[in-house]
Image 1: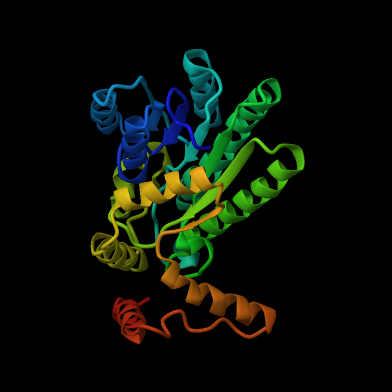
Image 2: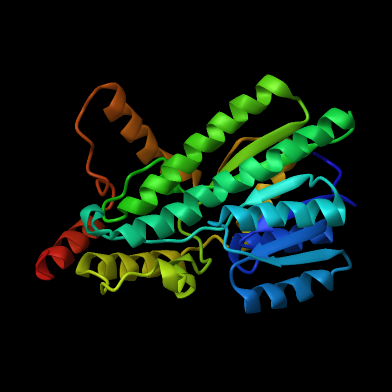
Length: 303
């Protein structure tokens, strides 16, 4: 896709982070923006700002894990703008801790947002985009799903998050292959960011009350929260930098988007272990001090 002016983008998680920065970037290029987010106040402020860039904006408050709400987003988009040209299934939450300590509510919340939110977006919008492509040979569409470097690695003490992000990579790779079977007009990408200051380490503030258990966070979960906050907030790459990568990949019809390609050496090591049937390598081999800190913190906490 090369021409954005007058076309329509649907962006989830648009109230902050990658979603907001991508909304800003595409609005400056003349796209109508459908901005969806679970945070009503952040969404209202973001929509007002993007509208000020001179484009039409449709703000839509939703919980991306709820199928009916994503279906309503699809209907509202089609009623207002017709078929979208870009869908950014970007909303996600962060959550860590030892994998056996995740409660049922933890699994339901993280899987619901990180995986089912993407699945709902693909299920709702892909048929609309394919129909538009069939009706108009000039139509071009693109879907980008946000996964993570955790979708190609398996850092310890991040179990439920790793599971969902691996699933999003798999979903996206399958979507890429499936689209190639039926059309040349709709393409897709998967975004795998590493540590970028976006606020994802504060995801718990938006956790719905009905998806919270009575249990207090475990020691391992508190340790994961602290380490994640430090890593995310110290990231040098900005959300705006990553938004530009997303737009460039759409323009170039490039599938994989890695914010930190230098980290792919760890993914290569993982694949070598798999192919050679070796036991998984130490994920902290390159930075043993981080692994030592995590191990010491968990053992001191009596885990």
